Image (cartoon, rainbow, N blue to C red):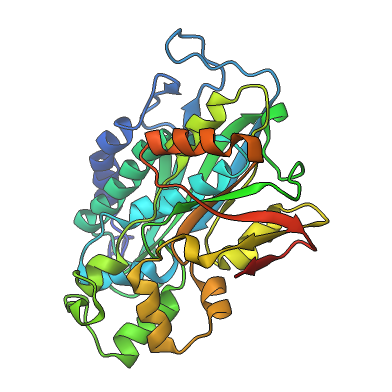
Length: 355
């Protein structure tokens, strides 16, 4: 009887090692001098304090901040289109935007990729997206894990998860506790759907409308294909928001922040509100991307359900002390953002009212 090895069971260890080597250069591109390289080591090494003059980072009372997330069924679009270089950006965005909410500086990112059969060409593209997301977030892709599990995933498919770690001085934590009625709500536009609501989106466009990824959306007034629109990566707000936080070293001008993902404005904003506060948002303050109008028409959904399923064109929210609103807006614009005053804090019971 011929011997049966791990490769015969569907796991190719040699191919896995080659894949790890092939992506190391992508990781290196995200390294700063705070990364201690240990190629082949069992864990990534990162300096928290760093005294080099240009990149000096020394903390008095550091708080580590961590988040983990995935991309969800948006991955199905990558499988359908064969385009895998954008979902990695989504993966990073979901983590770093979350830790940004408390004012943290993203330090490092780890990824986990799992597939039935290792296809290096596909997964290298996915890691390229992760590296690009880390570059946009100014954090290091410090390491990761790739699992080959025959029979566990459908052929040609994979799953990914990401882990973001950041740091913030304890006295600079942004936790929403100082939010008061009269504060101003600033919205930062999304790039579209980001990474939420895709189970409904796929049901509407692919099952109900019988569309394909290469089909044009021109009949809906969108000059893109279905695939192009749905694979638009999530915006990463780290550089622009961190620039504002750095400018105000003493006063806490930004009193609360929210990353608008699943649950939308209606569910995400209340999480940062203290007792006695509510938020009133004026929906006519921004031009929501056309794709949301298309989806609402196809689904026949009321506004309240749309605002709890999708971001509706606002990907990140900042609650700012009224006196500083104009200066914060100017700083955000200098960073390339298109910030909008979309509402205000009022008396209430930790809720959001869309008017």
